[in-house]
Length: 421
Ligand code: LLP
Image (cartoon, rainbow, N blue to C red; front, side, top):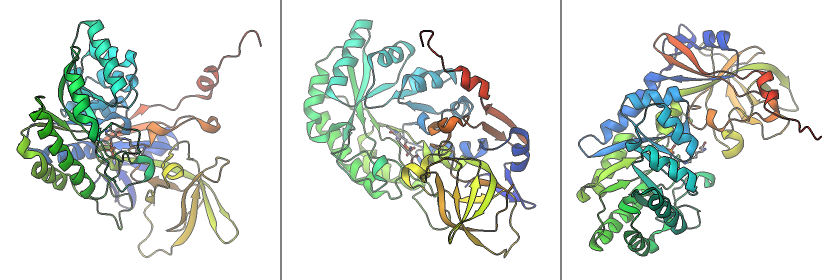
């Protein structure tokens, strides 16, 4: 469910007509609904209600501080994967005690900053990283709380580029080596082993891979406890998928996910941490663009919009589908037409949709890409010297720009021409 609906034929973001935002900030832009964000966060809270848990929003999905602040005020912890994300979360008012630090290549500097600013746990992904966390902690006279990310060798059945739980992926330590690694960790005075971490992939549309992975996790937790480790927290990662094509996708709901977690892991009595990103923010955001031209090609028509692959990379990168809807609602029963929806960048990859059937589009029409809240703005670049597009947040009948569009002057001034040239 989201808060982007037509009223009197005009697409609204909560109570604000999207066309009004377009007139105020120019296109293209991202717009987020706070009510949708909070609703999705609440769904996870409800799903895990009654069990000791913490929801750590995966900052990488959308990291604007207005989004982080919205979730932080609702009580969310954060999952960060870089120093920049850690600093963003802290700046948004999230205490270090509810920030987990994930990622396959944390540097000593990142570890040091997180240890001095406060951290709930490091999700350690390799033996060399374990040694560095230990060394940094000892150097600072601290003890670092750690969980190891174990790779369960489970097929997440999602896009290969966002699948992370197979043995061939770069993530985590092989589950078969876990006992050895935990034994070594227990002997290092700079580490306090508190639990186990896992994340098998993103945009999972089936609970089965999660279940298989969590069963392996439960087994491992018992084995490690028998070895004498105090396994008291299980971090289950993120990954629950969202319906990108509303007409035919029905991924599992958070409460079904929560029930499965209880069933498979409840008997262990551990604190449960989850790291959802996409499900919280994905359908809480639109990307809005204006049609520049409609052009007749050979056997196909192109809608050329003012957003491009640099603004929303997902279709080019993962062949991802986003529903695209007109901001002015078409009359019921209006004729439909197939279009290739493309951006102005000089690559064929700059194609958002092929043969998309929709009501007739004309130059000047505004179009909204649904499901653009997660991995949209954060993956944008200034390729083709196209300025990063603004982000806007809506709450009821109010809206505000939460990241403005940089001027060309700012962009040009970022480069320096060496004096010696
Ligand atoms: N935790 C860890 C350790 C992760 O690596 C990720 C996502 C998450 C949590 C959040 O997963 P989510 O709940 O959002 O599925 N750019 C890609 C998605 C990359 C996901 C990377 N890791 C896309 O646009 O589909």
